[in-house]
Length: 111
Length: 304
Image 1: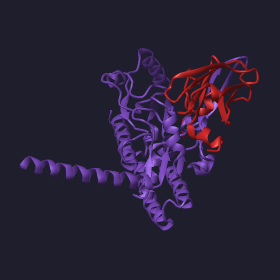
Image 2 (image 1 turned 90 degrees about the vertical axis):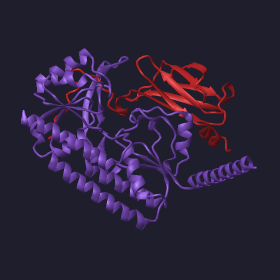
Image 3 (image 1 turned 135 degrees about the horizontal axis):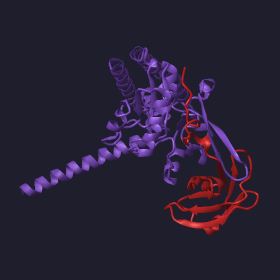
Image 4 (image 1 turned 90 degrees about the horizontal axis):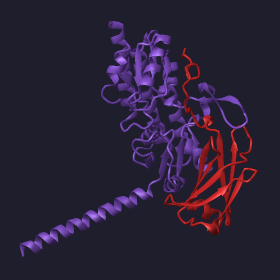
Protein backbone atom coordinates (compact mmCIF):
# COMPACT_ATOMS: atom_id res chain seq x y z
CA UNK A 1 0.00 0.00 0.00
CA UNK A 2 1.29 3.41 -0.81
CA UNK A 3 2.16 5.41 2.23
CA UNK A 4 0.39 8.71 2.23
CA UNK A 5 2.66 11.55 1.29
CA UNK A 6 3.29 13.41 4.47
CA UNK A 7 3.52 16.90 3.05
CA UNK A 8 1.01 18.57 5.33
CA UNK A 9 2.22 16.68 8.38
CA UNK A 10 5.78 17.87 8.00
CA UNK A 11 4.81 21.36 6.99
CA UNK A 12 6.15 21.38 3.46
CA UNK A 13 4.33 23.44 0.88
CA UNK A 14 4.15 21.71 -2.46
CA UNK A 15 2.83 22.99 -5.80
CA UNK A 16 1.06 19.76 -6.57
CA UNK A 17 -0.88 20.53 -9.70
CA UNK A 18 -3.15 22.99 -11.39
CA UNK A 19 -5.74 22.23 -8.72
CA UNK A 20 -3.54 23.87 -6.12
CA UNK A 21 -3.29 27.16 -8.01
CA UNK A 22 -6.03 29.42 -6.89
CA UNK A 23 -6.52 32.15 -9.42
CA UNK A 24 -8.19 31.15 -12.67
CA UNK A 25 -7.72 33.53 -15.58
CA UNK A 26 -9.65 33.27 -18.82
CA UNK A 27 -9.64 35.57 -21.81
CA UNK A 28 -12.04 35.60 -24.72
CA UNK A 29 -11.54 37.53 -27.92
CA UNK A 30 -13.80 39.25 -30.35
CA UNK A 31 -12.73 41.50 -33.15
CA UNK A 32 -12.63 44.57 -30.96
CA UNK A 33 -11.34 43.52 -27.56
CA UNK A 34 -9.98 40.86 -25.29
CA UNK A 35 -12.23 40.30 -22.31
CA UNK A 36 -10.40 39.04 -19.26
CA UNK A 37 -12.13 37.17 -16.45
CA UNK A 38 -10.48 36.29 -13.16
CA UNK A 39 -11.90 34.21 -10.35
CA UNK A 40 -10.68 31.92 -7.64
CA UNK A 41 -11.05 28.20 -8.00
CA UNK A 42 -13.69 28.21 -5.26
CA UNK A 43 -15.86 30.24 -7.66
CA UNK A 44 -15.45 33.63 -6.03
CA UNK A 45 -14.82 36.54 -8.34
CA UNK A 46 -11.44 38.25 -8.00
CA UNK A 47 -12.60 41.79 -7.28
CA UNK A 48 -9.18 43.38 -6.93
CA UNK A 49 -6.22 42.75 -9.13
CA UNK A 50 -3.74 44.12 -11.61
CA UNK A 51 -3.89 43.14 -15.26
CA UNK A 52 -0.71 43.29 -17.33
CA UNK A 53 -0.86 42.93 -21.10
CA UNK A 54 2.29 41.85 -22.91
CA UNK A 55 2.83 41.72 -26.65
CA UNK A 56 4.39 38.99 -28.75
CA UNK A 57 7.86 40.20 -27.83
CA UNK A 58 7.02 40.07 -24.13
CA UNK A 59 6.92 43.87 -23.85
CA UNK A 60 4.47 45.32 -21.37
CA UNK A 61 1.98 47.28 -23.47
CA UNK A 62 -0.89 47.99 -21.08
CA UNK A 63 -1.77 47.95 -17.38
CA UNK A 64 -5.33 47.75 -16.11
CA UNK A 65 -7.23 47.11 -12.90
CA UNK A 66 -9.81 44.38 -12.57
CA UNK A 67 -13.37 45.64 -12.33
CA UNK A 68 -15.43 44.65 -9.30
CA UNK A 69 -16.98 41.85 -11.34
CA UNK A 70 -13.57 40.31 -11.95
CA UNK A 71 -13.30 41.36 -15.57
CA UNK A 72 -11.14 43.70 -17.58
CA UNK A 73 -11.46 44.79 -21.19
CA UNK A 74 -8.44 45.24 -23.44
CA UNK A 75 -9.40 47.13 -26.61
CA UNK A 76 -7.42 45.67 -29.49
CA UNK A 77 -7.03 49.14 -30.98
CA UNK A 78 -4.98 50.14 -27.93
CA UNK A 79 -2.32 47.45 -28.29
CA UNK A 80 -0.15 45.90 -30.98
CA UNK A 81 -1.68 42.45 -31.11
CA UNK A 82 -0.08 41.25 -34.33
CA UNK A 83 2.18 38.87 -32.42
CA UNK A 84 -0.52 37.83 -29.95
CA UNK A 85 -0.96 38.89 -26.35
CA UNK A 86 -0.22 37.50 -22.93
CA UNK A 87 -2.64 38.54 -20.21
CA UNK A 88 -1.25 38.36 -16.68
CA UNK A 89 -3.44 38.91 -13.63
CA UNK A 90 -2.12 39.36 -10.12
CA UNK A 91 -4.27 39.66 -7.03
CA UNK A 92 -1.50 39.98 -4.47
CA UNK A 93 -1.46 36.44 -3.16
CA UNK A 94 -2.07 34.76 -6.49
CA UNK A 95 -1.32 35.22 -10.13
CA UNK A 96 -2.02 33.50 -13.39
CA UNK A 97 -2.01 34.16 -17.11
CA UNK A 98 -3.76 33.51 -20.40
CA UNK A 99 -2.17 33.40 -23.84
CA UNK A 100 -3.99 34.85 -26.85
CA UNK A 101 -2.38 33.89 -30.14
CA UNK A 102 -2.66 35.83 -33.42
CA UNK A 103 -4.69 32.88 -34.68
CA UNK A 104 -7.18 33.25 -31.81
CA UNK A 105 -7.75 36.85 -32.83
CA UNK A 106 -7.88 36.11 -36.55
CA UNK A 107 -10.40 33.33 -36.01
CA UNK A 108 -12.73 35.69 -34.17
CA UNK A 109 -12.35 38.33 -36.85
CA UNK A 110 -13.37 35.93 -39.57
CA UNK A 111 -10.03 35.99 -41.35
CA UNK B 1 40.71 26.02 -64.31
CA UNK B 2 41.09 23.59 -61.46
CA UNK B 3 39.82 26.25 -59.05
CA UNK B 4 36.80 26.79 -61.28
CA UNK B 5 36.09 23.05 -61.31
CA UNK B 6 36.30 22.92 -57.54
CA UNK B 7 34.03 25.93 -57.26
CA UNK B 8 31.53 24.45 -59.69
CA UNK B 9 31.63 21.15 -57.84
CA UNK B 10 31.11 22.86 -54.50
CA UNK B 11 28.29 24.92 -55.97
CA UNK B 12 26.64 21.82 -57.38
CA UNK B 13 26.96 20.02 -54.06
CA UNK B 14 25.55 23.01 -52.20
CA UNK B 15 22.67 23.18 -54.65
CA UNK B 16 21.91 19.50 -54.25
CA UNK B 17 22.11 19.82 -50.49
CA UNK B 18 19.77 22.80 -50.53
CA UNK B 19 17.35 20.92 -52.77
CA UNK B 20 17.43 17.83 -50.58
CA UNK B 21 17.05 19.94 -47.45
CA UNK B 22 14.12 21.85 -48.87
CA UNK B 23 12.58 18.58 -50.08
CA UNK B 24 12.94 17.10 -46.59
CA UNK B 25 11.51 20.24 -45.03
CA UNK B 26 8.52 20.15 -47.37
CA UNK B 27 8.08 16.46 -46.72
CA UNK B 28 8.24 17.07 -42.94
CA UNK B 29 5.71 19.88 -43.24
CA UNK B 30 3.43 17.64 -45.28
CA UNK B 31 3.40 14.93 -42.68
CA UNK B 32 0.77 15.08 -39.94
CA UNK B 33 2.00 16.70 -36.74
CA UNK B 34 1.27 15.42 -33.26
CA UNK B 35 2.18 17.31 -30.08
CA UNK B 36 2.59 15.55 -26.73
CA UNK B 37 2.73 17.25 -23.34
CA UNK B 38 5.34 14.86 -21.98
CA UNK B 39 8.03 12.51 -23.17
CA UNK B 40 6.21 9.23 -22.44
CA UNK B 41 3.25 10.25 -24.62
CA UNK B 42 5.68 11.38 -27.30
CA UNK B 43 7.37 7.98 -27.12
CA UNK B 44 4.09 6.08 -27.36
CA UNK B 45 2.88 8.15 -30.33
CA UNK B 46 6.20 7.88 -32.13
CA UNK B 47 6.18 4.10 -31.80
CA UNK B 48 2.57 3.86 -32.93
CA UNK B 49 3.09 6.11 -35.93
CA UNK B 50 6.55 4.86 -36.89
CA UNK B 51 7.69 7.42 -39.49
CA UNK B 52 4.18 8.39 -40.45
CA UNK B 53 4.07 11.71 -38.63
CA UNK B 54 6.09 14.27 -36.74
CA UNK B 55 5.67 13.82 -33.01
CA UNK B 56 6.76 16.85 -31.03
CA UNK B 57 7.41 17.46 -27.36
CA UNK B 58 7.60 21.25 -27.25
CA UNK B 59 9.03 21.85 -23.77
CA UNK B 60 12.59 23.27 -23.84
CA UNK B 61 15.53 21.50 -22.24
CA UNK B 62 15.80 21.87 -18.51
CA UNK B 63 12.17 22.90 -18.01
CA UNK B 64 9.74 20.84 -15.96
CA UNK B 65 6.89 20.03 -18.39
CA UNK B 66 4.41 20.06 -15.52
CA UNK B 67 4.97 23.78 -14.99
CA UNK B 68 6.21 24.97 -18.39
CA UNK B 69 5.05 28.42 -19.44
CA UNK B 70 4.88 28.45 -23.23
CA UNK B 71 5.35 31.50 -25.43
CA UNK B 72 2.71 32.77 -27.83
CA UNK B 73 4.67 31.23 -30.71
CA UNK B 74 4.70 27.87 -28.92
CA UNK B 75 0.93 27.96 -28.56
CA UNK B 76 0.42 29.05 -32.16
CA UNK B 77 2.39 26.01 -33.28
CA UNK B 78 0.55 23.68 -30.90
CA UNK B 79 -2.82 25.02 -32.07
CA UNK B 80 -1.84 24.03 -35.59
CA UNK B 81 -1.10 20.39 -34.75
CA UNK B 82 -3.25 17.58 -36.09
CA UNK B 83 -3.48 16.01 -32.65
CA UNK B 84 -2.58 17.21 -29.16
CA UNK B 85 -1.92 14.50 -26.61
CA UNK B 86 -2.72 15.48 -23.03
CA UNK B 87 -1.74 13.42 -20.03
CA UNK B 88 -4.69 14.38 -17.84
CA UNK B 89 -4.66 14.24 -14.01
CA UNK B 90 -3.65 17.90 -13.85
CA UNK B 91 -0.35 17.43 -15.67
CA UNK B 92 0.86 20.47 -17.66
CA UNK B 93 -0.72 23.52 -16.11
CA UNK B 94 -0.36 25.54 -19.32
CA UNK B 95 -3.16 23.68 -21.06
CA UNK B 96 -5.68 25.52 -18.87
CA UNK B 97 -4.28 28.91 -19.91
CA UNK B 98 -4.71 28.77 -23.66
CA UNK B 99 -7.33 28.00 -26.28
CA UNK B 100 -6.80 24.58 -27.78
CA UNK B 101 -8.89 23.04 -30.57
CA UNK B 102 -11.20 20.66 -28.72
CA UNK B 103 -11.67 18.35 -31.70
CA UNK B 104 -7.93 17.67 -31.80
CA UNK B 105 -7.39 17.11 -28.08
CA UNK B 106 -6.90 13.66 -26.60
CA UNK B 107 -6.76 13.05 -22.87
CA UNK B 108 -4.73 9.85 -22.61
CA UNK B 109 -5.98 9.11 -19.10
CA UNK B 110 -9.66 9.91 -19.57
CA UNK B 111 -10.52 6.26 -18.95
CA UNK B 112 -8.28 6.04 -15.87
CA UNK B 113 -10.02 8.46 -13.56
CA UNK B 114 -11.03 5.76 -11.11
CA UNK B 115 -7.37 4.84 -10.78
CA UNK B 116 -6.04 8.31 -10.05
CA UNK B 117 -4.28 8.87 -6.74
CA UNK B 118 -5.48 11.89 -4.82
CA UNK B 119 -2.57 13.55 -3.08
CA UNK B 120 -2.67 15.05 0.34
CA UNK B 121 -3.81 18.58 0.67
CA UNK B 122 -1.85 21.77 1.00
CA UNK B 123 -3.01 24.03 3.77
CA UNK B 124 -2.71 27.78 3.28
CA UNK B 125 -4.77 30.93 3.45
CA UNK B 126 -5.53 33.93 1.30
CA UNK B 127 -8.06 36.73 1.20
CA UNK B 128 -10.94 36.41 3.59
CA UNK B 129 -11.32 32.69 3.17
CA UNK B 130 -9.20 31.74 6.18
CA UNK B 131 -6.98 28.71 6.27
CA UNK B 132 -8.06 25.99 3.90
CA UNK B 133 -6.63 23.26 1.77
CA UNK B 134 -6.81 21.80 -1.72
CA UNK B 135 -6.51 18.31 -3.03
CA UNK B 136 -4.33 17.49 -5.97
CA UNK B 137 -3.88 14.53 -8.28
CA UNK B 138 -0.72 12.57 -8.79
CA UNK B 139 -0.06 12.85 -12.50
CA UNK B 140 2.97 10.66 -13.30
CA UNK B 141 0.75 7.79 -14.37
CA UNK B 142 3.31 6.23 -16.72
CA UNK B 143 5.43 5.14 -13.75
CA UNK B 144 2.96 2.26 -13.49
CA UNK B 145 3.63 0.48 -16.81
CA UNK B 146 0.12 -0.96 -16.89
CA UNK B 147 -1.31 2.55 -16.75
CA UNK B 148 1.18 3.40 -19.47
CA UNK B 149 -0.38 0.62 -21.54
CA UNK B 150 -3.78 2.22 -21.04
CA UNK B 151 -2.40 5.59 -22.12
CA UNK B 152 -0.82 4.03 -25.20
CA UNK B 153 -4.15 2.42 -26.06
CA UNK B 154 -5.89 5.78 -25.81
CA UNK B 155 -3.26 7.34 -28.06
CA UNK B 156 -3.59 4.50 -30.58
CA UNK B 157 -7.36 4.89 -30.69
CA UNK B 158 -7.04 8.62 -31.31
CA UNK B 159 -4.44 8.21 -34.06
CA UNK B 160 -6.68 5.72 -35.82
CA UNK B 161 -9.82 7.79 -35.33
CA UNK B 162 -8.07 10.82 -36.81
CA UNK B 163 -6.78 8.79 -39.74
CA UNK B 164 -3.17 9.69 -39.01
CA UNK B 165 -2.06 6.14 -39.74
CA UNK B 166 -3.71 2.98 -41.06
CA UNK B 167 -5.65 1.23 -38.31
CA UNK B 168 -4.11 -2.19 -38.88
CA UNK B 169 -0.59 -0.78 -38.72
CA UNK B 170 -1.34 1.10 -35.51
CA UNK B 171 -2.91 -2.04 -34.02
CA UNK B 172 0.20 -4.10 -34.82
CA UNK B 173 2.52 -1.48 -33.34
CA UNK B 174 0.30 -1.19 -30.28
CA UNK B 175 0.53 -4.93 -29.71
CA UNK B 176 4.33 -4.70 -29.77
CA UNK B 177 4.36 -1.68 -27.48
CA UNK B 178 1.93 -3.35 -25.07
CA UNK B 179 4.14 -6.45 -24.96
CA UNK B 180 7.20 -4.31 -24.20
CA UNK B 181 5.43 -2.44 -21.41
CA UNK B 182 4.04 -5.63 -19.89
CA UNK B 183 7.50 -7.19 -19.98
CA UNK B 184 8.83 -4.04 -18.34
CA UNK B 185 6.22 -4.40 -15.62
CA UNK B 186 7.11 -8.05 -15.04
CA UNK B 187 10.80 -7.21 -14.80
CA UNK B 188 10.14 -4.31 -12.40
CA UNK B 189 7.93 -6.48 -10.20
CA UNK B 190 10.67 -9.10 -10.01
CA UNK B 191 13.43 -6.57 -9.35
CA UNK B 192 11.45 -4.78 -6.62
CA UNK B 193 10.04 -7.84 -4.94
CA UNK B 194 10.34 -7.31 -1.19
CA UNK B 195 11.36 -3.65 -1.65
CA UNK B 196 8.24 -2.61 0.23
CA UNK B 197 10.00 -3.59 3.43
CA UNK B 198 12.47 -0.75 2.95
CA UNK B 199 11.04 2.67 3.67
CA UNK B 200 12.03 5.32 1.14
CA UNK B 201 11.93 9.09 0.80
CA UNK B 202 11.70 10.91 -2.52
CA UNK B 203 13.11 14.39 -3.00
CA UNK B 204 9.99 15.27 -4.98
CA UNK B 205 6.47 13.77 -5.00
CA UNK B 206 6.64 11.98 -8.35
CA UNK B 207 6.39 8.30 -7.52
CA UNK B 208 2.84 7.64 -6.32
CA UNK B 209 1.92 5.23 -9.14
CA UNK B 210 5.27 3.47 -9.02
CA UNK B 211 4.81 2.98 -5.28
CA UNK B 212 1.27 1.67 -5.62
CA UNK B 213 2.14 -0.71 -8.44
CA UNK B 214 5.12 -2.30 -6.68
CA UNK B 215 4.05 -2.01 -3.05
CA UNK B 216 6.69 0.56 -2.12
CA UNK B 217 6.61 2.80 0.92
CA UNK B 218 7.65 6.29 -0.16
CA UNK B 219 7.35 9.60 1.67
CA UNK B 220 8.18 12.77 -0.20
CA UNK B 221 9.91 16.09 0.16
CA UNK B 222 9.65 19.07 -2.14
CA UNK B 223 13.22 19.68 -3.20
CA UNK B 224 14.17 21.31 -6.46
CA UNK B 225 15.41 18.81 -9.01
CA UNK B 226 19.17 18.83 -9.44
CA UNK B 227 19.75 21.42 -6.72
CA UNK B 228 21.98 21.20 -3.68
CA UNK B 229 19.84 20.75 -0.57
CA UNK B 230 20.14 23.58 1.93
CA UNK B 231 20.93 23.01 5.62
CA UNK B 232 17.21 23.50 6.29
CA UNK B 233 16.36 20.87 3.67
CA UNK B 234 18.75 18.44 5.31
CA UNK B 235 17.29 19.15 8.74
CA UNK B 236 13.81 18.41 7.39
CA UNK B 237 15.11 15.23 5.81
CA UNK B 238 16.71 14.16 9.06
CA UNK B 239 13.42 14.65 10.85
CA UNK B 240 11.59 12.59 8.24
CA UNK B 241 14.21 9.84 8.45
CA UNK B 242 13.69 9.72 12.21
CA UNK B 243 9.92 9.68 11.74
CA UNK B 244 9.79 7.03 9.03
CA UNK B 245 12.93 4.97 9.47
CA UNK B 246 13.72 5.49 5.79
CA UNK B 247 16.83 3.89 4.34
CA UNK B 248 16.67 4.99 0.69
CA UNK B 249 16.56 8.49 -0.78
CA UNK B 250 15.22 8.77 -4.33
CA UNK B 251 16.40 11.78 -6.36
CA UNK B 252 14.59 12.73 -9.54
CA UNK B 253 17.80 14.17 -10.96
CA UNK B 254 21.44 13.88 -9.95
CA UNK B 255 22.32 16.60 -7.43
CA UNK B 256 25.60 18.52 -7.29
CA UNK B 257 28.70 16.90 -5.83
CA UNK B 258 28.55 16.67 -2.08
CA UNK B 259 24.80 16.13 -1.81
CA UNK B 260 25.07 12.35 -1.72
CA UNK B 261 27.67 12.50 1.04
CA UNK B 262 25.40 14.74 3.11
CA UNK B 263 22.48 12.34 2.87
CA UNK B 264 24.62 9.23 3.28
CA UNK B 265 25.62 10.72 6.62
CA UNK B 266 21.97 10.31 7.60
CA UNK B 267 22.17 6.61 6.84
CA UNK B 268 20.49 6.81 3.43
CA UNK B 269 21.28 4.95 0.23
CA UNK B 270 21.03 7.42 -2.66
CA UNK B 271 19.45 6.54 -5.98
CA UNK B 272 18.53 8.67 -9.00
CA UNK B 273 15.20 7.60 -10.50
CA UNK B 274 14.35 9.73 -13.52
CA UNK B 275 10.55 10.10 -13.53
CA UNK B 276 10.86 10.35 -17.32
CA UNK B 277 8.46 13.22 -17.92
CA UNK B 278 11.01 14.84 -20.16
CA UNK B 279 13.51 12.06 -20.72
CA UNK B 280 15.62 12.31 -23.86
CA UNK B 281 16.06 8.55 -24.24
CA UNK B 282 13.56 5.80 -24.94
CA UNK B 283 10.97 5.31 -22.22
CA UNK B 284 11.39 1.55 -21.84
CA UNK B 285 15.15 1.66 -21.36
CA UNK B 286 14.95 4.67 -19.05
CA UNK B 287 12.37 3.06 -16.81
CA UNK B 288 14.27 -0.23 -16.71
CA UNK B 289 17.52 1.51 -15.77
CA UNK B 290 15.87 3.47 -12.97
CA UNK B 291 14.17 0.38 -11.57
CA UNK B 292 17.46 -1.49 -11.57
CA UNK B 293 19.15 1.41 -9.75
CA UNK B 294 16.38 1.39 -7.15
CA UNK B 295 16.60 -2.37 -6.74
CA UNK B 296 20.37 -2.07 -6.27
CA UNK B 297 19.84 0.51 -3.54
CA UNK B 298 17.41 -1.81 -1.77
CA UNK B 299 19.92 -4.67 -2.03
CA UNK B 300 22.61 -2.42 -0.57
CA UNK B 301 20.36 -1.66 2.42
CA UNK B 302 19.73 -5.36 2.94
CA UNK B 303 23.46 -6.07 2.80
CA UNK B 304 24.28 -3.52 5.50
